[in-house]
Amino acid sequence: MDLGSNSFHLVVADVRPDGTFAPTIREKEMLHLGEDVTRLGEIPKASADAAVAAIRRFRKLAEAAGADEIHAKATSAIRSAANGPALVDRIEAEAGVVVDVIDGLEEARLIFTAIRAAVVLDPGPAICFDLGGGSLEIAVGDKNGLQFAASERLGVGRLTAMYAEQDPLSDASRRSMREHCVSLLSPIAEQVKEIGALLAVGSSGSFEAIAAMVAVTRGGGAPSSLNQYSFTYEDFLPLYRTITRSSQSERRAIPGMDSKRVDLIAAGAVVMRSIFEVFDLKSMTISDWALREGIVLNAIAQHEPEEWTGELQSIRRGSVLGLARRCSWPEAHSLHVSKLALQCFDATRNIHGLDLLDRELLEYAAILHDIGEHVAHEGHEKHAAYLVRYGELRGFSPAEITMLVALVRWHRRGEVRSDSRTGDLDRYALQKCRILTGLLRIADGLDRSRHQIVTDIQVSSNPSLILFRLSTRLDPELEIWGARRKRGVLEATLGRDVEFTAHPARREAAS
Image (cartoon, one colour):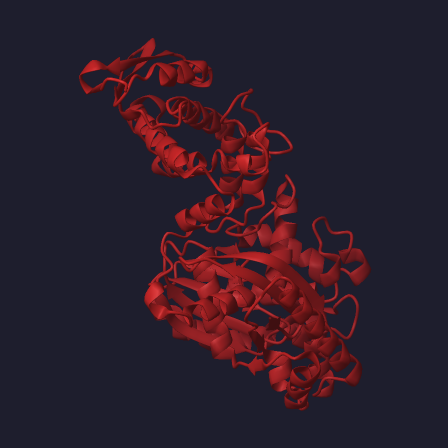
């Protein structure tokens, strides 16, 4: 439980032996405690009642889901409130949950732990900003760990209570809010300048809400996941002007606006602009993991430390394999198809000209291509596309998720195209998708029996033909038949015939 200044969050997670986890329940309760504390210095009785009720409900949900541990962390509002200790005691007595009140630096550490697990911090180091209701946490680090942390009282609830006396914000209030933000952020910018952060990451609700609106104004609608979505200062600036010069009722009409944040989003926009300017940032990448996921990862780290390496390596691969395992994947077949697909990619690289990122996406699509069988065999490619899109894969941009969805959607048959299940692919991405789909289909066909008969692939080619030479351990008749059935997309995309021949020297007699 993340008991924040603006909202309370619950995550119930199923932790696996390899230290990864799958969220099974997510809940949120908007309470705006930070505004109460800023105005009154304490949490009023009505708000305290609502907080206790929310935590009691969270506990019941967690216990119903089979949770055997509950970890609750409280942040700025409860930490700052004069009656915060009394509320913590009341939560334990009435809701049965022990609350750990953490300081801003511990909050920053937990948030960085989550961001490092959700976003590829490359190039690093990265400077990370988490904007809550009561405070702004700042963390600098890379894949090896945290190098700097700070916390400032720049939360959206606090700033709204201090400066947003009029609706819309007056010019004077907006200037005063920005000056306040700049005055607190400038010393931190000086401190971190020598670290030389190369990437900026933003997390939590206000920044995600702004990113969603930026995505809509760019065209094409907000992606299903904002994780690793990036936008520039130039993308943000027109939206900043719209948000900060409009009333709450007018903000509701802004495309992509989260209606629950119309009252606080102006302060969020002011903080974001101040960050861009003070830290001289050109762009920002979003992490949709924050404190709540950091709490889970921290709890995992407390168990059997010999089982956990302490390093969150290979975010993308671990996330892909985690989704595959959750879907009871056909492991031997999928890993073999992945191996064959990469051999096909490498052997034809001088023909298709795709890069290493495309190769990586092909590998992951091959691992995931049959996870839809977990739902039903018939139409399993459509089920797989749905599972990939909503499988909470970590470390992928929205565009990469769209490509993975398309690859698993079309791995089996049909014309490779954009549709409602795959998402929009521009002409360049669609051409890449057709090449990768063609390679994936052939690799899938070459394990038609699911007995891993084809052991190695070499390719020779001329302007009219691509010949796949197969090394095998048994008679590959069924595999060649399967690959021939699936060669049409690659032939059409590369403009060459495709044929297969088995290497007789490597063939063993069938038993």
